[in-house]
Length: 254
Image (cartoon, rainbow, N blue to C red; front, side):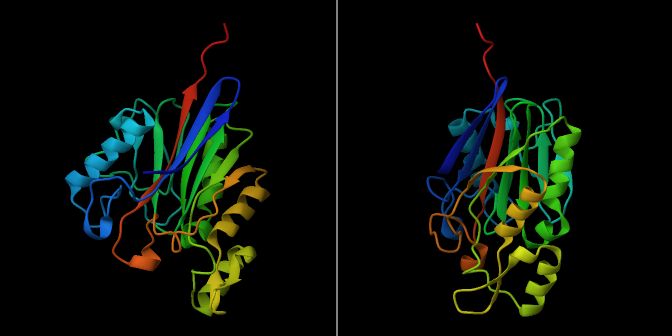
């Protein structure tokens, strides 16, 4: 269920971050078993049960996990505790990044090869979650999320880059590699077969570096190579795992 978990601590706030995997849920067939996405063809009631289980494991209220409808764009949704719950039914807000300054509110992005990026300023008390696919990364979804965090008061952001497809497995036409490399040259790569490929996570890391963001951890697993993770490139019809980040206020010093 949980692939990895991280804690970033500050004086006033602690940011908790996690990435799920495909194990330990209720889904069956190609979605086996901890699918968190409503849009892939899995039964809605099963997805709801998986999302409820995730909230329990993370010790968050089920209606305080914010999901969005992702479209490989650059829109950033600011979600706060007084907003309507964004978990179930449906994912009504269209965005590929979320930002909040509220505590105990989990921001969720769903992936199955794209790069999940979790962001935190634990001094300011601002966190963000980004779904960075090939197009969104090239178009600037990561800088857009950082800009939204700055508007919310963030000054010193730290990032965690989650599992995504590696360049060994992400073969693309040469023209597509060139087009993406025009936006981020470090993404141009070569697959395990010696063919043109892309390294989207490297593009994300370069954008973070340019923005002065420290990378706390870059999770190394490749989604296409690790059977515990969902991969659209490997399987076609499949589920989605998630990156989640949330803030907790530290107890007052006594």
